[in-house]
Amino acid sequence: MSDSTSRSHAVGDSIVPQKLQEVLPKGVEKAVPNAIHDTGPSDKTSHATDKSAVPKPVQENAPKGLEETLPDKVHPTN
Image (tube, rainbow, N blue to C red; front, side, top):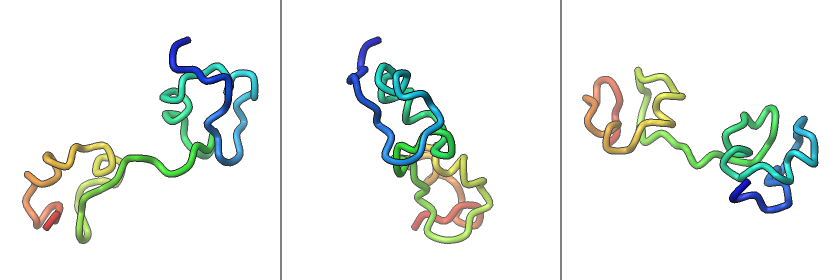
């Protein structure tokens, strides 16, 4: 597999077998929920500056430009 590093990217607990951690690409390890395979904080973030009507998972996956196009009454970003 490309992008494997012969090492795990876990920084905390993991239920993924060590041998599997060592051959999986970093992107696959990061995609697994931290409750299963802890690779540390996600690069995903919300750009909301106050309470938002948009669900948190959507905020964290939406591009900043999309968040900024929403009305401030729905999702404040200023």
